[in-house]
Length: 444
Ligand code: ASP
Image (cartoon, rainbow, N blue to C red; front, side, top):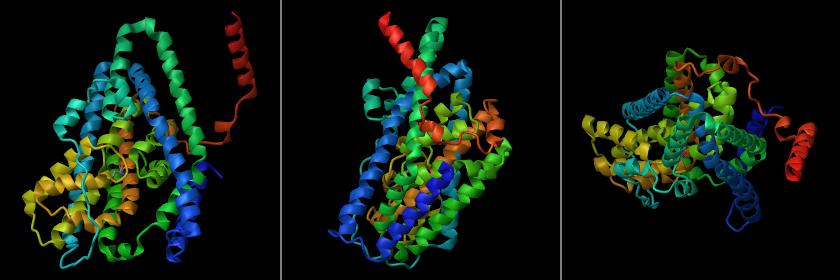
C-alpha cells in the first residue's frame, strides 16, 4: 500500500472509531476512554505530529525561498510571480465568497429559524491592515522567525536571496549549502509524512469523538450549505480555473492533491500543512521550487477560499436568523472585508471566526450571532482548510506554468514524488562515504 492509501485508511478508521465513541456515548468526561484515549493517547500523538510539522515550517520556508530566488536569478520574473499569485489569490477568494453568498441567499437559509444557544463568542482582535503592511518588514528577522510571522519571513528570505544574487560568483558555496539544507528539510518532511497514517488516525478519532452531534443536526442546514458551497468551489471553480489558465487535467491534479488535503483536514491549519503542500506541489505536481517556495507559504497566509465560503454562508445565515437585511451594498462590503481580512490573518485553526467577527463589526451584524455557529465550526474548519490548501496549489501550478517553470512530465507521471520506504532508509554506502569524509576532515 502506498502512503496516500495508508493515510486514507488511517483517516477512515479514525473517523469510525471517533464516531463510535461519540454515538455510543463512550466519551464521557472522566471515563477511561476520554481520559486515556481521546484526551490521552490520541491527543498526545496528534499534537506531537502537528508540532513536528510546525517545527519544519520556518526553516523550510527560509531555505527553500532563498534557493528559489537564487534559482530564478531574475528579479523581474520574481516581481511577475508575486503579482500574478497575489492577483489570483485575491480573485479566487472573492469569487469563493460571492458564490457562497449567492448560494446561501438563494436558499434563504436561516429565515424564520430560532436557535437557542448559550455559547458566547469572544473575538480576539486581528491586527488592522495598516499594521499587517508595516509588519511585512521585520525589525528583527530572528524574532519574526521565532514567532512564525510568515509574511516577514518571506520578505527576509527573498531579500537574502536577492542579495546573494548581487554578491554573485563568490556566493556559490553559500548557495550550495542552502540548497543542501533545503534538501535536508525536504527529507525531514518525508520522514514525518511517513508517520502520518497513525497520526491522522489519532487526530480524526479525537475530533470525531468530540463532535457535538446534537448541534450538528440542529444546524444541519447551515452545515450542508457550507459543505455544498465548498464542494462547488473545489470541484467547479478551482478546477475550471486550473483548466482555463493551464490546460491541465483536474482529475490528475486532484488525485495528487489527496495527501495534502488529508493533512489539511486533520490539522485544520494551512500553515502546519506548508511542508506537505510544498512537497506535493514540487515533487508530485511538477511546479519548480523557484515558484512554489514563494507561492505556497504566501498562499497559506493570504489565500483562504474555504474560509471565505464559510464567512459568506455564515453572514447570510445569521443575517436571516436576526432578520437583518444587508442589501447589495452590505454584501459587497462583506466580500471586500473578507478578502482584506484573509490577507492579514495566518492559516491557523479557527482563524476564520476572527475574520468573521471583523466582517460582522463592519456591516453591523450582532457579534453574538457567531455563538450560534461556534459548536459546528471545528468540523467545518477541517473541511475549509482542505479547500484553502487546494487553492494554494492551483495558483502555484497556474503561475509556474505561465512562466515556463513547470515540469509536465512530473505532472503526468502518477508515481512521481511518491513517498516510500526509501525515505527513511539510510544508504549504507553513502553513510560510509560520509563518515570517511568527516574523519578525514577532522584528521587534517
Ligand atoms: N484553519 C484555516 C486555515 O488554516 C483557517 C480558518 O478557516 O479558520 O487555513
